[in-house]
Image 1 (cartoon, rainbow, N blue to C red):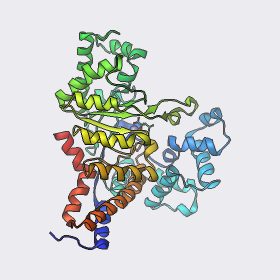
Image 2: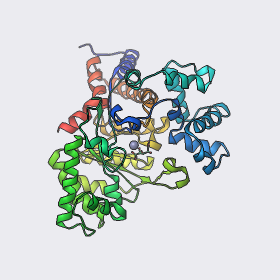
Image 3: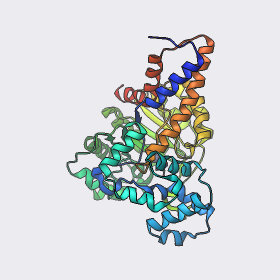
Image 4: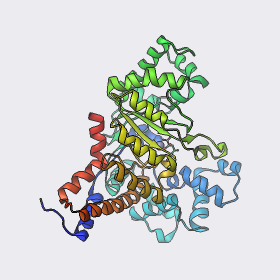
Length: 416
Ligand code: HDL
Ligand code: ZN
């Protein structure tokens, strides 16, 4: 086991190790191909990604009504013209499309969108999944599975043989955020005897719902996205369902509860999926949850940059809290670098530095190549500082550490 005494050799070892490390991507919106059209892929999907839709409305004078009346091909044509031809594609989302097309071997120089469409038309989805996983060096992804989604729900109601690289996550936003605005009625229609007051019987029924879906999906975790004003404990339907239903079932099945906090839905409804905003959360909610439930496991990612330092401090207080990813508006090089440094300095190797949040299969290529580069930069500095302090690591130890960051930490956290 040769220890590395030289800074240049150390940098080479770190960069090679990060590049070679297969990824477990713990939060995506991808679907195994047996979910049919729910799995999005190809250049028109890449271009009509909601991040690019928001940017297009800023750079063009298209009206909301005119855009939403367009076909997907027309929308992609407009986005390509606006963000790639009339302006240079230097935003993170635009750069991602270029990275991906280039990595797929397409001639980016031609700038001919129909060229790229032809490539995808000639490709079948199963081969494409293999190609993308290979290019991105991803070994598995966790989906976002919504039992309340009328398109997705029927797929779970039948025996399914999914692609083993696609794991499930049980997403419960409508239950926690919509109970009083209609979800209760849906539950009753589904045969769960629940009432507005959420008494003992209702909570037992909601626990039954969660148990049935955990047994059906075998999810890696249960997840919810929450607004900046989320508080716990809270005298609300959400507070009661978390306390009396989600936490006991999470512990019983050893399925962690993932809280994704800070999203303000539909700040501009005219942008549809692109219309969500964000805000700084009050992390006393998370502090209370972790302290009062030491035998429960929590995964958390936050949407506000201003919450990140206090999240790291919370991570130091509660070993049952696993911090993950640079979520959504955080998923940009300047912020990824800042919070990865903060996390390594405060938490060492006990975090999951990134997830892709990919919605389109092709995005795994750019989201991971961009993030690997930044995380490697941070690790090079941190290992170099440790070498300067006098500690020589071996290549095996670097491999061990990087494997923890990109997969083992998640695996061990689930198994604990
Ligand atoms: O709630 C979430 O999981 C978010 O990631 C949203 O899906 C968001 O629209 C998104 O795709 N962010 O990257
Ligand atoms: Zn997401």
